[in-house]
Image 1 (cartoon, protein in one colour):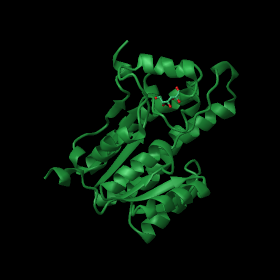
Image 2 (cartoon, helix red, strand yellow):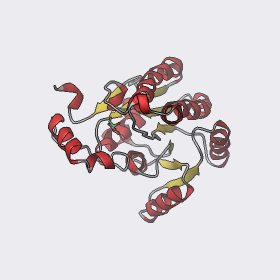
Image 3 (cartoon, rainbow, N blue to C red):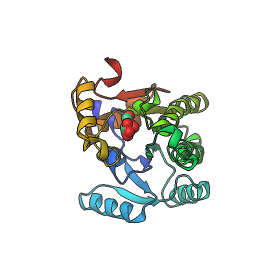
Image 4 (cartoon, rainbow, N blue to C red):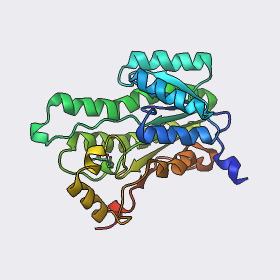
Length: 255
Ligand code: GCO
């Protein structure tokens, strides 16, 4: 009984930015629960390398190289997956970039690039994938929000604005798609040690601050998001909708 709730056997998933970092960890989790996972990235070489490494371990993955901010490229790739395979059952909007700078020094280009990749792209990909879910009257969308969907810090104004918007977009998607048995939820990671946060981990004063400020007194590990991702992608969460689950070692709960 229990394993049935969390089984993703026969499901097809798409993880944007799934070839590294938290996206790769989530992609591996969905595959280990039985899904066939399309690994997206704009970087063809990076996607190819990750897919071949995963396949060597027997993981059921495919490449999905496209620019999530380019609607034409999104539509072309998703339609190709639907024609060659089947419509997407599980969408993880994970891809995200950081361009840290004090707002007053931040270029409009850097502001808009983060909004485009971290927020607008989630809309573009979901809008393209959802008709297939509506046809099947079933679907799962997991938006990778952030602790910064609700808390800000200096130099990440573009990122916080995008992730705050993604939290509300999660609720807006729920409002429109829940009645068609499509569950839309978010995962809001706190501070996890990944490529994107490497400069922060290596900055002794920042690292000391995080370990002091976080009740768990450490950075999160990408694998610590895996069980929640499988839960939100599975029938075990069939009545969970519009929720954003913060995974931050307690940071946002304790001052
Ligand atoms: C930063 C970090 C954060 C983390 C994470 C926190 O510059 O403070 O990059 O944004 O990546 O998103 O929730």
